[in-house]
Image (tube, rainbow, N blue to C red):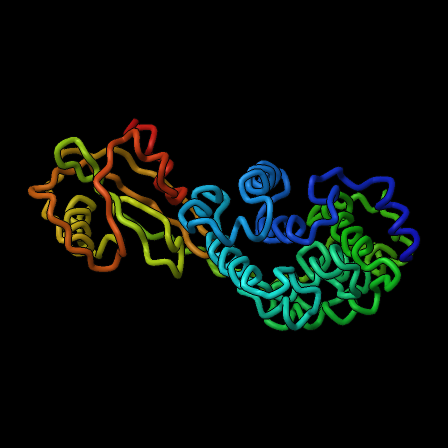
Length: 347
């Protein structure tokens, strides 16, 4: 089976930029970006990132705001923050090299079992099996596994067969082959089983039950939160604030706002949130637009208002920094995707 899979990969794999390098840093960049993100989305970000930060040392020397700006739109910003922290640590080592040791590499910020396995196997040819969504789906069909792929024990349960199957002679190639098989052939729905190089070994295919795998625990409905935000003007400049460096959207800039309370109008919520977050007393002039945005575990529906500030004195409560900027200066700052959805109305 291993030989068949490697042969298929050699003939059919996509010519992706991170597959044309043996640089551990470049491979690490790709694996961080590919978490929770599709390949076609990652490619331009990957190219721009390496063009700007070509080494782990150049990334370590960069200002976090520059890193976040380059990451803007890719989402899951904790990846960028942790990668920056990890680069600083690596640069502080006497060797200045990305560690090829599992324990040392695994201890770096943002490096979990998957990233460690992927980078160490692909860049250093070490025998660690990767387990991601593609791998779990293939294994669940290959062995007709009833373990839900989104259950709490999923990683540990799928790690065992993944490790047993790993090609010890070429772990990096084998890991990439399994993931590529999941991306191109063993798809979540309507897989191309007749084109699969390892269909003869697949228990689900033999039983004609491929559609029953992988098993999943039914997810709860995603909550929708009503949000109000204000574009606060004072002397033709707009107020923006920067979020705390940790947590959701940490380190990004945004227009002040927050959740609308029960029985509260969006306009009243906007004025209240501006006052609570910035100390600025503002009045609503007009409703700009309503935008919708989805995050991993929730969605928002945001009413955006044009507001006027009575004074420009700011006393922050929550945010860690602020600026009064012109519309032309918005491109200088990293903003969340939800804010980008109403920028066209401001420019």
